Each structure stands twice: as structure tokens, then as C-alpha cells.
Length: 468
Image (cartoon, one colour):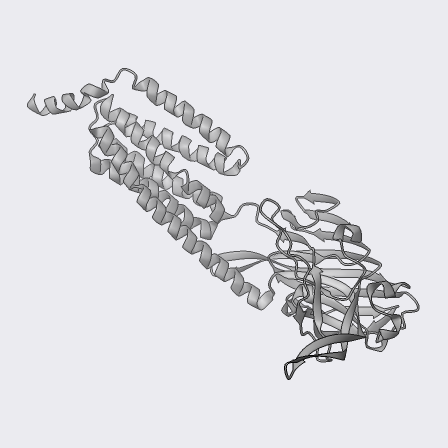
């Protein structure tokens, strides 16, 4: 009967554990809201594309319309844009991290400085791309830099063409950055190569993405942040991650990009890749999106690819607490088994209410852990919460079990469990292996200790005790 009661109470305690999950989710949502609030004044996730030379060109299109029930064919003159990617694009990127707080919530923001040089050449065989040289309106050519959140731009941005500084203008970015960014008018005949030197400073939050464009793209990214995450469509050719920061270099040829140097449609924003599930990219489609006031139209000629760098925390406290709650049933189970052994084997009588109060204390540990971790960090919070619960249950079990010796045994068991859980939380790769082996050992120990108990006659002995 006692075994059944202990099991029922343990199952019932899964309900407050699930409520702690709900509390964790709510606090995590509040933290994300606070991070978004910081980003509103600082700058959001940044995606940088370009530089790209955009040249309007005249084209003639044939349209068929219906008039008075008859098909009528018309010839329409229109202006579209040609996108010329650089022959070579080299840039040095420096990312300066900074921690910002709002109330008790903290997030990592950054300020990136990009200094690069791009070489442009108008192909002699440009007619192969469906545009004649005579149709190009080179007097209206522009250099465009895409910046997904232009609010994050800082002072000191500059652009020079063949060594001559040119004023940057707001707006007219690239389709791959949501048509957000900056541009400059250039005077180019297309007869000689064009060299563009650029410096861009931008603040952001979350991922920092770079979109490669051109025949040969080479980036060197440096930061003082010791815990980067490299993602996106291309990984670094080489990287060095140290305690004082990281350095990563990228070399991306256009054969890997799968993009021509000359496009008659701009690239649409990159898609978040998931190499484990399903397709990664949509097919190239023509999508019209007005981006200028000069009568031209921006069209999509495919999907851009990007590299992504994230400045992550080495261990997110919410994910650690989430994982620790998953082990909650083990704490309840082991503690109840200890009480049951003292009850059945040693003869200490433990009431159902005492099982329940002990279980509630074990669940309360996770609430204390969450509350303290948001203020003082995970490790100090873990030590404080576990010490409080161990001390509480030690004093309580001494009264319930009528023995300080038994209470000390229970305290030692709880200290071992909490120490084990902390180790498992920091050994992600082997946590399942270690946890399953230790559970097997614990089960074997319980089976050994109870090997001589007559479970079938246990209820009859309890009924005979009052009569005696």
C-alpha cells in the first residue's frame, strides 16, 4: 500500500513540474521581448550585401492585351536594372561585442566595422546576358550597398571610386537586404576597370550576415568575443577561436555561389538553411518590387546565399534550466525510494503528507533556480537553490525519520544528485550515456536492498500491527 501511495504522489507531482515549465517559457518570452526592445534603439539583425553596381538599361517588351474582345499586340519601351557584381571583393570585418541590460535581462549587441575594396569590370561580351552595350544608361549608374537595418549605421561611413571620395545617399539598397541600405552615383563609361573602396560601420543584435557577390569574395572577420557560432551557407576556410576572441577567413568563388557576374534581376533575401529537413532554397522567380522613384523596377533573379556569425553565450540559462527540469522526476523518484526504504526496511513510518511535502520542496528547487539565475547567473543560483533545498529536507527528514543518521544519509544522497545533475548539464554530448548508466546502477542498488522483502505479505503485516 505504501508503495502505491508513493507512486501516486510522485505522478501527481508531475503537474507542478509542468507548471514550472510554463513559468520558464513565460520568463523566456519576457527575456526575448526585452532583447527586442534593446534592438529597437540599437539595431536589429544585420545582413550586409554588396557592393554592386546597378546600371539602368532600355529594353523593348512585347505585350498582348485584349481590346474589344480582340488580342492586340503592343511594343512597350521600359527601363530595367542590370546588376554587375565585382570581379574581386576583399574586406576586413571587425566585430566589437557589448553587453546591454534592460531590467534583469541581458543580451549581447555588437558594432561591426567593414573596410573593403571591390574591383569592377564591364564584360566585353555583355550582349550574351541579353543586354546590348548601347542600351546601358551608364550616366545613371550607381554603387549600392545593402544593409538590412539602416538604423544601425554609425558615423564614419565612406565610399571612394578610383580614389575619389563620393557622397553616400540614403536608401536604394539591394533586394537581398529588403531594399534597405545606401548608394552613391558614379561617373563611369565602362571602358576601364572601376575600383570601389568602402567603409561601413553598423550596429546590430543577433546574427551578423554577409552576402557574397562577385567572381572572388574574400573576407577576414575578427572579434574579441570568445564564443562565436558560424552558420549560413558557407563555413570559414580557416578559423581560430581563443579565449581573447576569434579570427575567421572566407574565400567564396562564384562557382560555389552559382551566380553569374551579370544579372538582370537582383537576388532575393537569403533563406535560413536547414540541411536536415527539406529543401533549402526556393526556385529563382521573377518578383517585382519597386525600389526607386526613377521609373525602374527591381526584380528577383534568384535567392542570395549568406554566411552567418552569431555571438552566443557559452550556456544559455533558460536552456540549462529547461534541461534540469527534465531530470526533476529523478530527484522525486530517488528521494521517495530512500523514504520508502527507511519506511519498509528500517521501520520508520512515513505518512502520505510527508511524501507530498518532500516532493513539493524538490519541485520548488527549480522555481528558486529560475528566479535566482535571472539575477546572479546559473552557477551561483544552482549552488544557492540546491543548498537551501538540501538543508530544508535534511532538517525535515530528521524529524520524519526520527534519526539524524538517516537524515545525513538523505542529505548525502541529495548532494550527490545535485552534483550529478550539474555535471550532466555541462556534458551535453555524454549526458544521456552517463545518466542512463547511473540510473541502471541505482536501480540495481534498490533491487539488491529489497531482494529479501516479501512484497506480497507487506500489506498483511501493516494490517496486523494495529491489532497487536
